[in-house]
Length: 405
Image (cartoon, rainbow, N blue to C red; front, side, top):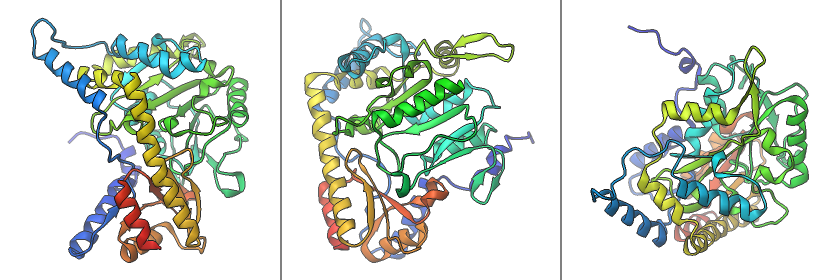
């Protein structure tokens, strides 16, 4: 038998959301008469927009015709989508990002993991605590995390987030080579202002660090003082990669399409000190290991930038934000401390009584019939918290909250 990557042996037995699903399934099997409302996983429930469906039908018809058939597409994404992204997500907001900086993919989660291919295994990685599990798990798989001790990996730098610092991490005391930041944040639902984010850009410029900025939830931002793109901050193109997704913006969780921005100004060095543009490295990685997102999905994504598509994005995100607001208000009225849910579809809550996350998960499932995501699965600073999402239907959200009332 071959020897396998031993880092998988170091990982927890199951991924957080898989374990939640397993426990919910076990509860349903033991209680077949009970309804369970899923308030845990961040999966959308609204259907794809009419403009997206029409564009995808058109793409399918093209693929059925010899004269319009598309085979392998460009690994970086089709120009019609990259140009639309550059124009609407950046140029129209006063940000100078060009289509050559944009790489279309099959989703943000894939890119978060795959970016580890282009920076050294020796890099010290900093992650928010709590944080989306992929940042940590991928570091473990790639051999950057060290060993697990008392709930923390020895080579990771943890950026603790709690109510005392408004869930905004402080700059690390030691040098971090790669820094994962996510705003609006998953799981806490909190967002970041320009002055706060500028501190991180300045730190990265001073220390030669790389920021990987996960802005998958930027479409939910309503407060004009809140950052939607890290490139709103001067100098960020020299130190930051930005990852975005159509999953929550336009309901593409099952369709799969997202993109990553790697500005050509962003540089790194080889061991011998030779400078190299990270854009060229990512391009080389993608052309080697990725054949591009599907033509049909990219045609659908391009339709998001039509007037009809942009109106639908606003309508859908308003719908989920209203659900999140109801969750937050209900939990607060019942004595929970709740955060997020204003510029984000996530609500982060605690009973503030010392109860651990999995016990709180079990209590809400047993007593009220809805599932949550235990905060401890996002890191040690998440213990005692649960995450709820506004992505269910309005009917189910109201039903779940009426039970706790």
